[in-house]
Image (cartoon, helix red, strand yellow):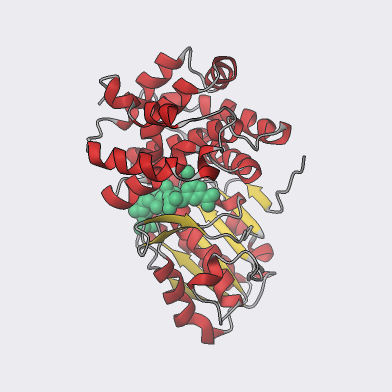
Length: 366
Ligand code: NAP
Ligand code: ZN
């Protein structure tokens, strides 16, 4: 067994301001990477720029990261800022800007790098230091080395092979206050999926189970917020963010499994949000998982039974019309990928994969 989580995590209210010196200790010239709007609205961008100014750190802003960031965006940022002698990169936002920041930090360090470089296991994986400030509660990207990137040439999403762990993760639940309920729900379902998939994973071990168990307990405490039965307060936002970070630590140890593998083509073709796409396959995956371990995970996350869990997913994610042809395409793509087929802790053959993919349809679910 090995446990590797080299990220310095500060998880507290106003942590960006409190740790301004830790940010500026990473260099004199920072590139801030954000999505198009939200960082300016939820206060995270201002907190970061105030912190940098306080310590005399120069900064540039790249605010063009789209949802499900593409490799083209990564290289566009590199080409625009390569002459600025950037020392470190700060990713602010959901998984999209944080993942983009990691890849940008890699290619800024290696100006000669091209698309192949991102997928070449023999290439030097060192990158400029990265700081992550999450503003959604799903990906846990602030504590993983993973960068999931859209490949338009392949019409799907493929993570780069290099692992770029952030040097610093600054986690503050207050950035969720301005997030719409659907974004909180979608990203919390993503976090739940990370927690389940990391344990029901061929690479799971006691360290993965330790972080997943802690994450599931925190996640369970926020369930009523997701169903709308409770108005979220400051503590709920903190717990949602922390559960997402624990979930990130869990997948950093084991990787994800079939719901994630199945989600990528759906997201690419239908522009379905990541959490929704993963959540579509989660009931089928859980229904096939060995009952004892599955029920323990469900119970830790506050569900009485698999039926209770499925009705929760239907309730919070709502109706999703996915064409039969799209499900077939996804099923064929994953069935032909041996690594993905072997990613679960239990044996999955093509028949079982089909049951997972068509579970919602077959069970008359929305
Ligand atoms: P996202 O794609 O980063 O953002 C989704 C939307 O939410 C964007 O429109 C964004 O607006 C907005 N937004 C973000 N924070 C907000 C806030 N606090 N208030 C209001 N709006 C806000 O969403 P995500 O679900 O966090 O990330 C999904 C990506 O992460 C996918 O590409 C997925 O594959 C990847 N992922 C990575 C890992 C990993 O380990 N690295 C794990 C799971 C998933 P703006 O565009 O204006 O910012
Ligand atoms: Zn995910």
